[in-house]
Amino acid sequence: MTDENPTVDDQPASYDEWLDAIDAGEGFYLESPAGVGSLPPRRVCPETGSTDLTHEPLPEIGTIETYSVVHVATPGFADDTPYISAIADFGPVRITGVVRGVDPETIDDLVGDPVTVSVGTRATTDDRVVVLSPPES
Image (cartoon, rainbow, N blue to C red):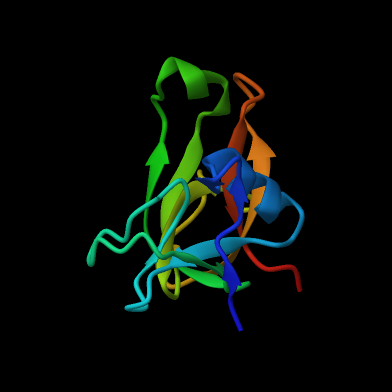
């Protein structure tokens, strides 16, 4: 069963609302009638052009597809270095985030490792950031 894409003042879910939902343990993605997944603030399916996007629960576990260890960052992340930036496959969508719970100085390879998604803050600016972490045992 799917719910209609939630709106605020007739607008699709924003990125901040998506972060709020993840933070509340209610992560979601948007799905078109053709089954194409995307993330807010998407308003149109990137493959079909459909605007009929529904709210679907985000899988709890994803898998790291690729990552980089960042030693020299932009000013917005300067105090966070070194950190790991990764892309994880969560089934119908891919999520980019900062990996926490893994030492960036001692990793051998993260590709294929399972991760969960949450919301944290940057050390540099205290802005919210998508966090990918190994699942708790």
